[in-house]
Length: 498
Image (spheres, rainbow, N blue to C red):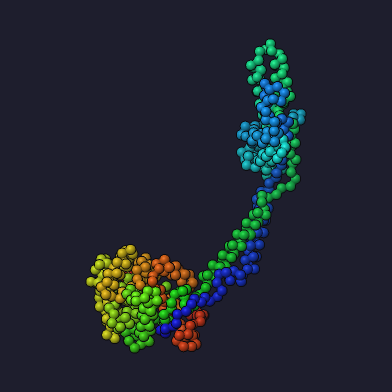
C-alpha cells in the first residue's frame, strides 16, 4: 500500500450530458420516429371525425309576453345578449332530449332526429355557441359518420325551434284563460301577439353533410410523441453513461484519498511493524489526525468508522488499530456488521458475539488481542442485527469517555442502518473503495455520507496499481481487465454471526 497525495475528483469519460451530445443524432432520430408514429397512429388508428354546423337566426330580442303592447314587453332590446341566453337553452337537457325523437323541419312532412346509435353519446361531440355581435347561434356536431354529424346538428336546432313555439303557445293559452270570453278585443290582441312572435326563430340554415374528416389533433399528438421520444432517448443515453461510468482517483468526489493498496494484506504482514502495509496504515492514521486538525483545531480523532463501498474492510481496520496501538493509544475495535464478522478471518477473538449488551457496559465486554510488534488491541464483537441504530451512538461515546480510540468496523453506509447511525457519531469515516468502482455505488455512498455528515471523511483505494508507471505517489490511470479474467474478490466471511 502506497501513500498518495490528496487530489481533486477526476472522472473518466465525458459524463451524462456529453454522452447525450455525442449521441445527439440517434436521439433526434428516435424523436422523429416517435413523432411520425404518433401522427400516423392518430390518422389511422383513431376513428375519423366528421363535423357539421347548423346556424339558427333569431327574429326576436326578447321573450314572448302576451300582455305586452308593441315593443314594451320584457325591455331586453339587445339581440346579442338574447342570443347568448338562448344558446344556453339550445344545449339544455329538454332540447337535447327532444332531439332524439323525430322533429319536423318545416319543409313538408320532413323530420330529422339524432341517430339512435348516437343517442347516448352525441352530447360529448356537441358545441353550441352564440356568434359575437349577432343574433345567430351555431350548433356544431362531431360524429364518426358524415350524415350522423349533419343530422344531429339539424335535430338539435329544429328541436329548439319546436320547443320555443310550444312555449309561446303555452303562454298564449295561459293568458287567454284569464280573459273573459266576451272580451273579444283582448282575445284578438293576444292571438295576434302570439302569431306575430311565432317561435322567435327567423330561419335555420341546415348543415351540409361534410365530405372530409380529420383525425383528432394529429399534429398535437405528433408533437407530444416527438417530445416524449426525445426525452426518453436522452434519458436512456444519460442513464447508460451513468451506469458505465468509472471513477478514478479519488473515487469519492471531494473526499481525501489517504493511501492505495495493491491488494488486501494478510494478518502476518499487518502484524509486522516494519512491513510496508503496517507503515502505510500509520500514514493513514496520521492523515486522519491531520484532517481532524484542519476541520477543528486541536481535535484528537477518537472514533473512526471503517467501512467499504464493497468488499471487506477488516484488513484496513486491523492495520489502523495496530498502528494506533503501537503509537501508545488504547484501541478498541467494535466488530459489528450485519453480514458477518470482518475480523474473524484474521484470527480475532470474535466467537460468540454478545447479542445484547447495554451501551453503558460495552467496555466490560472488550477482549484483548495481540496483533504483533508488542501491540495489543481490544476487540468488542457485537451482533449488529440485535443493535438499535439510534442507541449505538451512546455506546461509542461510552468507549471514548473510557479513553479508547474506537475503530468501528461496520457494513456499508448504504445498506447497514447501524453503520449509517455510527457515521453521524464518529469523528471520522474511512471508506475502502475499489480502484475501479461503479459510479452508482460511489454516488449512493456519497449520498448517505452527506446525510450522516461526519466531521472527516477519507478513503483508501484498493486495486491493481501495477500500471502506474512512476513513483508510489503517482496517480493511477484506469486499466481494463484482460478478457476472460475475473477480478479478485474482497475476502468475505461465509455465514452470519449469531
